[in-house]
Image 1 (tube, protein in one colour):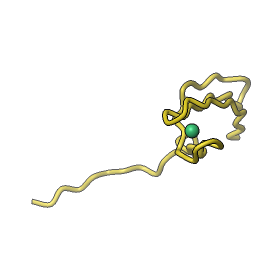
Image 2 (tube, helix red, strand yellow; image 1 turned 180 degrees about the vertical axis):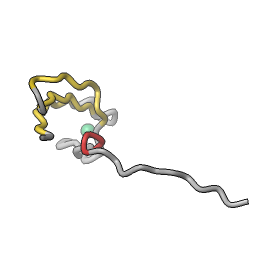
Image 3 (tube, rainbow, N blue to C red; image 1 turned 120 degrees about the vertical axis):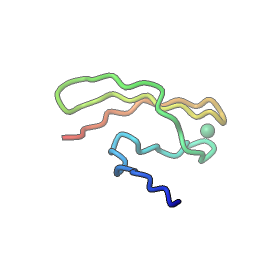
Image 4 (cartoon, protein in one colour; image 1 turned 90 degrees about the horizontal axis):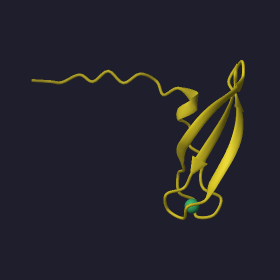
Amino acid sequence: MPQSQVSPAPPPFDLRPACPQCGRAMLIARIDPVSLGVDERTFECHQCNFSETALVNFR
Ligand SMILES: [Zn+2]
């Protein structure tokens, strides 16, 4: 019996930047709303523990 999986298109905030140190995909550690349409996102690399904060404008 075929199973159909509904997989919605990944929202932009699922984008994971590559770690500048080891090149692995980083994970989102936290998202802080800064203002309307702007988030401050903290990414963490679980490979080498590098962390990075980025402002993301999604308007
Ligand atoms: Zn890394």
